[in-house]
Length: 77
Picture 1: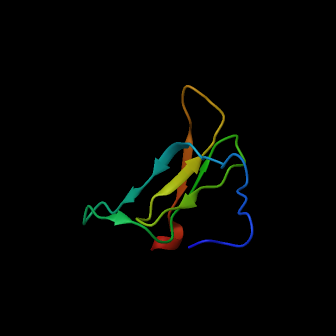
Picture 2: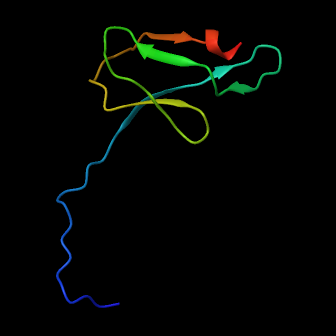
């Protein structure tokens, strides 16, 4: 399809780098718990993004040798 106007794209596209992903497992069934689970990285204000499979994904965190993650699953029951 041709257009009568030029098409412009924003330059350059933003690319996110996944730093870490968190998944909680139910101890009895061994299945991932995808609802009611929250996570945060100690000392950082970054919030995770929940991807389509329920993982809590942290992107573009500052480089560190290790990260301490606090997981809260009280809303999961």
